[in-house]
Image (cartoon, rainbow, N blue to C red; front, side):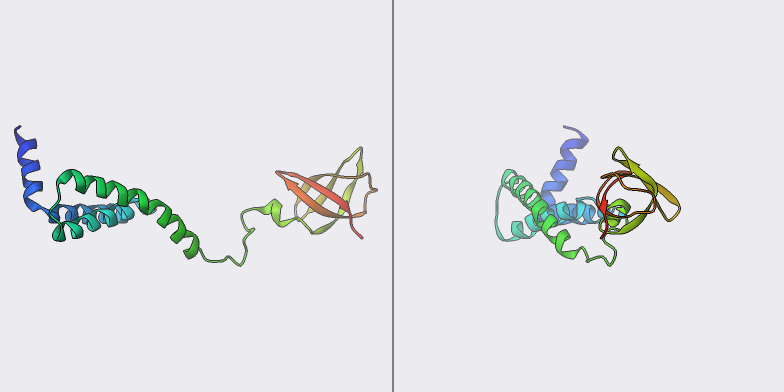
Length: 154
């Protein structure tokens, strides 16, 4: 087997510590590549290592347990991430068009045949809605990309 055989023999000789070391390596990789799943894989490896101190089980069962813990960690991670994500004071900050819904603007060009324009800050937006003369006040009801749906504002 050569070097591969001696490497595997060395890993096997470490027993449960091999899983703990693997977990530490995975934690280190998480620090180097943040946002990856390495932390959860590291937790799975450490769990297998800790259990291996209490139970004398084959390496095959250890690998199966690692796979189960690793797969189980994904939904746990998602649940954890959803709870940790703070409520934003500006949830529509990066969805500019969604932030326009409900706001009222003045038509810069009349809506003719369902198409017109409004000026919002320094940008001209294409709007669609019922025909209205220029200067009419309209409320944004939908935003689809750069197109806004509007209705007459009361």
